[in-house]
Each structure stands twice: as C-alpha cells, then as structure tokens.
Length: 263
Image 1 (cartoon, one colour):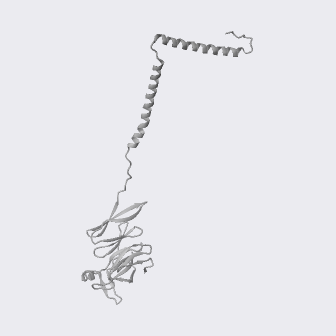
Image 2 (cartoon, one colour; image 1 turned 30 degrees about the horizontal axis):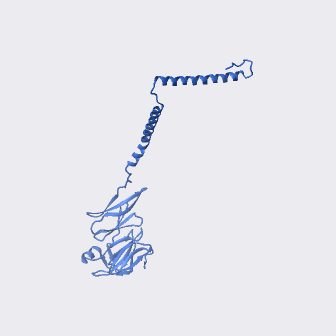
Image 3 (tube, rainbow, N blue to C red; image 1 turned 30 degrees about the vertical axis):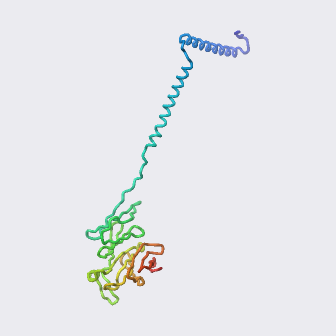
C-alpha cells in the first residue's frame, strides 16, 4: 500500500483511511490464526455439536423463565374465594312484664337505631313495629298497651277504665275478672307513627258482644271509636296503600290517615 504524501491536500483523511484498513486486516488475520489453531489441536471439533449445546442451553433457560412466570397464576387460581362478612344481629331486650321479655332485632346506621323484627315472642304477647321502625307497640297477656322506643323507654297507654255517657265507671280489672273472654285491648297496631288501632268490646259490657275498632294517639290522650266497624270477628292486618287493612266478618276495609273506614 503506497504511503500518502505529506504535501497532499487530503493527507490527514488518507492517513485515517489507511489506519482503518490496517486495523481491519489485522483483526481478520487474528481470527484466521485462532480458527486454524483450534482445528489442528482438536481433531474432533464439531461446529454442529457446539450449536446444539448452545441451543439446548437457550431452551433450558427459556423453560425456567416460563415456569417462574406461571407460578403466580397457579397460586392465584388455588386461592379460596373470600366470603363476605355477615354482620352479627343486634338484639334489644324489652321487658314487657314480670318474667316476660320481648327480644327485638335492630340495626344501627349512622347512629340511628331501627327495629327489624322480634326474634323471641313470649306467650300471650302481641307486637307491631311502627312505619319509621323506631317504635314498638306491645299488647301483653293482661291486655295492656305499651309503646317502646329505640332507647328502651316505654309509655303505658292502657285505658284503665271506661266512663259511660251517663257517668258510670267500668274499671278494666273488674270487667276482665267478671267476663273471662272480654276484649279490653287486643291486637294493637300502628296506623302511622302517631296513632294506633286496636279491637275491643267497649263500650258494651257482658258476654258474646260485638267487637269495635278504636283509635288512640301514642301519647294516650285522644281516642276515637269507629262505630261502623262493628262485627263479630275483626282481624287487623298490615298497612297498605289505602291505609291499614282490617277484615270485618270477612269483608276487607281500610283505615286511612283521616281516621275513616273505607272500602
């Protein structure tokens, strides 16, 4: 290779090019020597075997990586589904009379307690929950009526006596002891959160009498007799769209919020 003249205009460029060519030739020569040396010292040298071993090593490495990647999936599929936690029922014990306790389930949300349903009802006890779920009315085995709130506070709205238009007084205890099947207060239920309905034989006294529906405020102050409700058998049902349903001798009627008995 002819050495470039130092007086040439492209002297530096030609020198760089010459160095690159020399470096390339040197590398090629070195590789040829290495290959020939390996060939003469190892007669059984086989490029095919080397290639196979390298491929096997690559395959094994890939397989291990695949197993590692799949492990999390296996673990995730073997996990049991998480069951939702069912909140434990809360029970409020309401003392109705000596030895008789009404156990009512309730729920509390943002500090507001609401009754749900009674879980244990003592014999001879009737109960009903108000539309707001914050009051319970109870008719006990002695036909007393009590209204109990979510704090366990009770108000007895039992009518202790009846005074006739002529001023004659009929006391509850005496009437009940005289007439064993007499209905004084029975099956009290809420019409709304301020008024209750119950069935009774009042204002008449004796045996084999008709039944009537009476309405009373929860504070026990105001009472109304529904005279048109007269019947031998009255069943007080649940609140419907028209009002609370009542069945009088097989005929279904409703008491609306205006205290009227309607079809």
